[in-house]
Image (tube, rainbow, N blue to C red; front, side):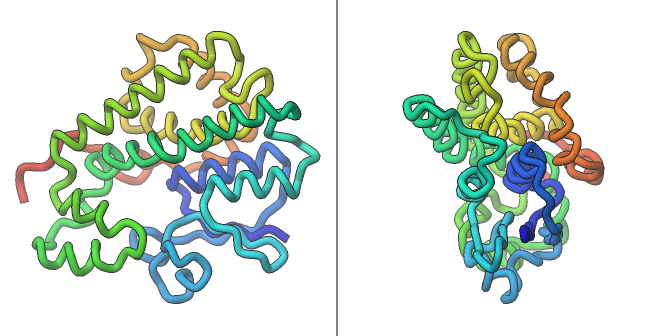
Length: 254
């Protein structure tokens, strides 16, 4: 009934796997190898023209965009609700979802690429990088052009860290009067934020919250203790488990 095209280490895939696990849904796994550009093959682009993961297939319907997939699962499989029942509270959670998707989800890609993915481009000159990595991407061509084969520069790194720190500050304020980002009950906002926090933790950037944001620290510990978290973050779903974690700042050598 449910088939998910996903990647083990993709934060967007992880948020969908968290929702599937929390709802207790069975699904068929179709792994997509991002390192070999399986997400850019004609076959996959026919499913998802953006050339990104995840993609959900449900009874023949194709659902793309991780946030949309999570809300789709909530609407279709409502036995285990992940949104509040009260409309005002639902609106608050949806505002959190939009913010998380638009700001920290994009920002976390900067340290992720600088610290883990750059060795993939060793041996490429600038022209080859442009043709073989940037030009082939329907959605993130300019992201790759800005990064280049040596990584994002200090200005981009600082901007990303500022956005991530601002996100954590917002989370800390929200958790002052609520046990979860979604309010009184665990829900979609928490599952969309969790992979971002886990990625920062995996990149050894936990100092962004550990000393200054005790409520976020507690929230993250409680969330990681849930059975659904272990199901979504199975072995080899974190970058440090299969890639060396390097420096945050741009490489200066070829």
